[in-house]
Length: 407
Image 1 (cartoon, helix red, strand yellow):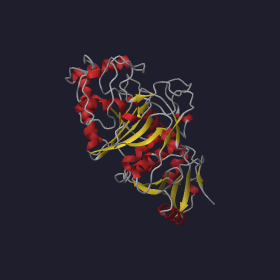
Image 2 (tube, rainbow, N blue to C red):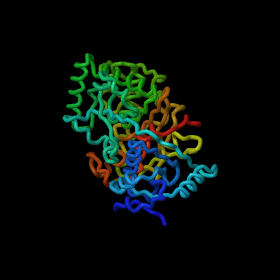
Image 3 (tube, rainbow, N blue to C red):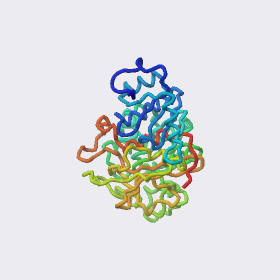
Image 4 (spheres, one colour):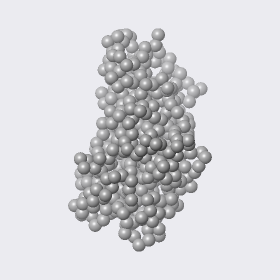
């Protein structure tokens, strides 16, 4: 008989012969998002977690302990107790060359930072990564310009997230957040305090620090305008786009950008930043269009397989300051992980920089909008969100023993 961890405390009733806990990630899982939190919890306890790529939606296998089993119960996460014989049979199946599956071991909880202006004054309540980290109960630190530039804060972390940010420093661009004007004032004050003549000069130094962090082995995960403007700032190579007489003629060095090439800049007073962005705010609020996750060989292309683990391969479209990436501008050496096959909309891409890795995921909130307003999303309503699962794949990525991709 199969034994499941469900909504009642069963820790004391598990058989002594129990060997492992299988946390399934297919449609049998009660809470997909919190399951990632259980994996992180085990890593914090120095308990290794095996990520079973393409097995039942990318399930987790962990050595049995009453503590972890009880934590599954408390968080409402489904887990199955397996004996040694059952585990050996499962691992033999995954190792078979006849199935597109693999096992990746995770042994260390990554140190996570979120680049955000969030503080006691600025309430950054709609950052999808902050929302899902809180929901999954995965710890993180908030850092911003001053910590990066004065304290060399990035040296303390393995993983960094960028979201609805303008790394070009064009403070005159209209933002959609209510706190925008306050944020601009705080940015100008910080730039002056740190000795910069302009916000754009300060942001460019931040960009260089983040780029160096990535090249030295860090993991960069950027969403929405954070991805687009980071690449623009790299290509602009320090040009002051805010005060340029004609920013459309600013020379761009596409050899310096990570993901995009041959794009043009939009005028300063335009809400868009460049021709990288397609779709626009409110795109597909009716919820009738989807983008598709690509399938990779789990035994050969471990990295993209990790990043695309899911129980669904169709993700509902969602918009943002940067809704989707314009396919003709994506560099040929960038790996596309997901796209809308009916439009030139690339949604999810991956690349390598030096010893590090980066992923760009377009759009603002995978469950945002669609008639519910633009406020914070309540993830209690979306515990199985495939769009949010992509974020959490990236969170666990630095823990995995992985090889360079083959294709």
